[in-house]
Image 1 (tube, one colour):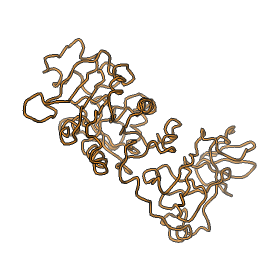
Image 2 (image 1 turned 45 degrees about the horizontal axis):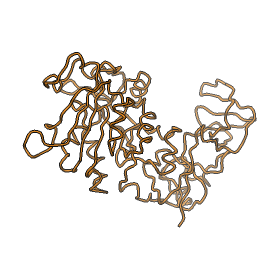
Image 3 (image 1 turned 30 degrees about the horizontal axis):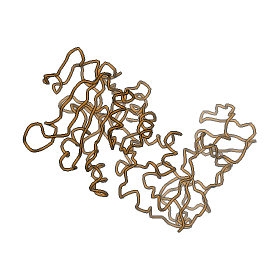
Image 4 (image 1 turned 180 degrees about the vertical axis):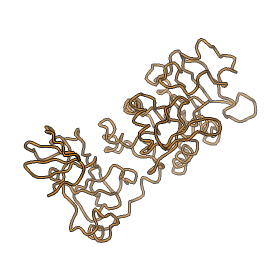
Length: 394
């Protein structure tokens, strides 16, 4: 489905996905419910968010007085600097302004600032938004946008998925609060996972399963299912696996995950992979059990457990300790294998030279999946990325 679109977007850097207003509202309300003062007196930066298209700017402009913001800053990226254009010409928002300059419209980014009532109606809203051209194209890595980052208290946006690692590092370097959108697989990045492990970043309140709809540029190629065009001709696609990433607290992350004992999980599990088994599988080259589903985490096991990365949606730092992740950069495997052969579902064999750098293997007498390994004549299956956790016992 739309994951095909996401992969194509990352490959071509055509990943301008515009978040829907109600998705922003649901997420921001969760932080407000936990701490009503979370935005009070704060300067919020929305990088690469033109108010002509950005629902982030629209949301915070509409809520400026209610949130008691100090200042709202939004920047846009120059059309000529994009691989994909949302529009073929400058927007009406820009063309109707006295400062509009055709010579700059395609090559310069813009900065939008909201900090006071300019219309005299005693309200601060989008009608009071003022703007001017930036010196450069509006890239977040530029000196002028970096200066705006340094001024801000909180950075909020949906950055290009292809630049997620770089964008996150750009925020973290400045020690800023943030609420951003990325793909769930970003938790496995070596630049990202340490922040999660050290409890410096976590999943947001909403978007924990299924997919979400994003507006895309007019020229975006629609090549898969899960898309629509509305009555105004705007294009939308549905993307799976998106998540909010943040370092701002909310109530859900402190809710303990309800669990059953190991015995009850094996007797009553709804998952056929577990029901009726005598025990959980144990990794061949790491001292941990394989827990293939978050709702199958046993309450009475005190050792290390390998759980799906989607566990992080329900991770409670008072309930579990995160120890690592089973990826090649983790370096935690405990067994050195001799020559290995990989066999795919078509029976094609190929030699494998690296199985001792963090990947964990399950042993079986017969091949379990479409692609498996033979080590010294025995079958092994490499599991998907697993977060390694253990219970916190008070």
